[in-house]
Image (tube, rainbow, N blue to C red; front, side, top):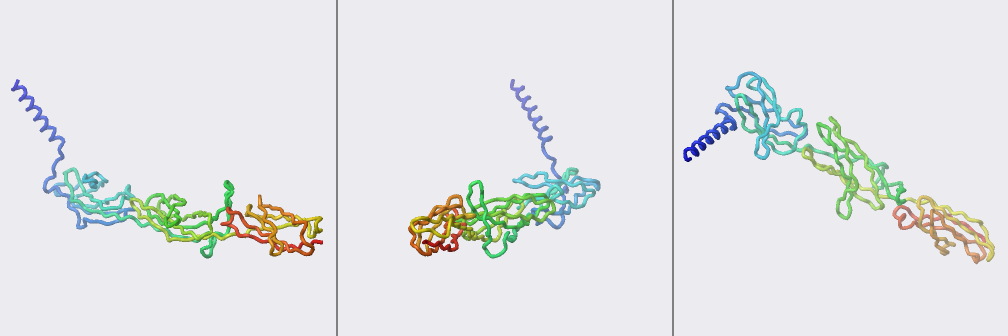
Length: 346
């Protein structure tokens, strides 16, 4: 029994030695070293990176064709990154071949390896810097000072007015291959920058950037600060534009007043006036006789009517109407006053 166990253990030990010999990687001989050129540290852009490495194969290698493997160290492990098919014992390899148009910024270690005979080089370092991104601001849709909102617009879904302007800008987003540029339009609100809209534009191959136009809306005439922001990627830096401001300019609504007559008889007849507004549809009108306030009437659907008192004193009365927009329209429209209409009372 004891002899059988010993014999089995010996067989297993022999198998282990054999399998270990099959699995172990062949060791490179002392002279099986790939010699690198004088440059062992490189610096390049993460977009269209370049690092051309000169090498000399060991004397044990023949002068025929060789596959030169480029390996990169990731998390302490050497993994194949690319390869080159070169002839002779000396030559150069491009660390970043045609398939590597962009790489994550940072410091990377590479080495060269061949298999027949087995030989590796010492590591060399490549520092990849994030490619710069820039944002250029263009003009607003309407030229002039900070007052860029000189028109109004209605969102018919909610029937609420708002200021609207368009701002042109460009993003220089260097890349050797097609890439999307993500742009955030931000507004300064109570000391914090908040995103109000975003844009995504494709930068085609060979293009240096894109030119875009942003639509900016706000519901206040107050001067408001904005900026554009492009976030950083693995291979490009982020960018923030200069701050620019927009200010709404209130509009003057159109006010027209018609009168049923220009005369009335004391205690017998009265003139009715009809006020019509355009643009601003709600609010109130206040009717004045000279400086004296007669009555305020609500404007509904741009119209309001008022009939003068039959007891107006005899003589000439200077009637005028002032329109005041409602709270919803007040940030966008000024008040408006009609021309004086003389009403004679006999």
